[in-house]
Image 1 (cartoon, each protein chain N blue to C red):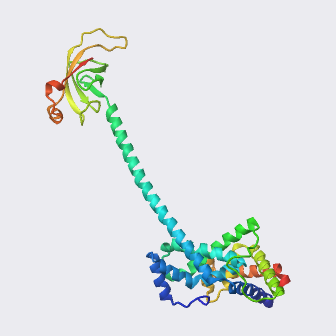
Image 2 (image 1 turned 30 degrees about the vertical axis):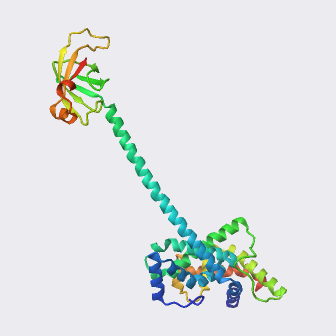
Image 3 (image 1 turned 135 degrees about the vertical axis):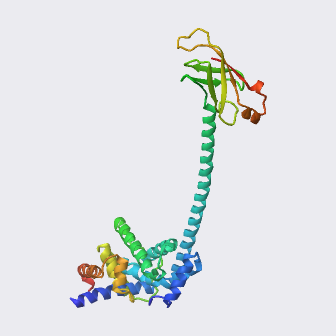
Length: 172
Length: 187
């Protein structure tokens, strides 16, 4: 039994030794060295590609965030809140002056939140004064009326526009 | 390290640490120190020097790319042998699937002046061993290859195989039993 085991070991060892004697070690070493060079180059280029990809992805993400912010600001309608729980959405069709207003409830006093719909840099509270609310009601229940929206002084100062020019006259 | 140049443990440790720091020359020295040893193991596992040479190259590349993950530089040899042994197993499986023919040309070029009869006998033995090794399980192939390496303790063999010393011995026993049947014409 032991002899057979030894014979197996000797057979494998003989085959191994015979084959190793014939190996061209310099050639093998050169081949390993070349493979290592290739591996290093491919790792370097992969890392470089990954870095470029990360930077590009960062730029794309930043651009997307800016785009969303601009879109949100542009689409944000100016909201008119009336004291007795009335609410109106004002869409400015020009940079100043006129506006389209959808009104659900009228009141003598209200405040308006001016959002990104106009060229203001920030949301500002404005006073609103209804001039005339005696028009006929339309089918959907809305009523035509003129309002004046006055912007607060600090916002006007930021824009550098005089108060008279920037007061909004809106048809409700 | 009987299969290559002599190097003491501290030299190996220094070379491994330098390689981990990105020193390519240090890794080249490790390749030169260990290539014969890992080649011997791969030939024992695969029975064929050309296949073994491919496995050794792939193993060194894997070791080069992963050397940063080796925590204990003193265990470099065990770690490297495990990489090459696993690469040899993968190669053997792929060869088995493809029923690949033995390559004649390559790194293994018979330089000895053998008579035609001796040459034929050597080729026959090589092919028989190669076919027989493919019929062993991966644990058995690893065990028979590693137990034949000089200066490798049974504990190191079991570490490379990822099992206990007793289990490794059992795999050697099983491998020998199978090989006795498969190589009976050559015994």
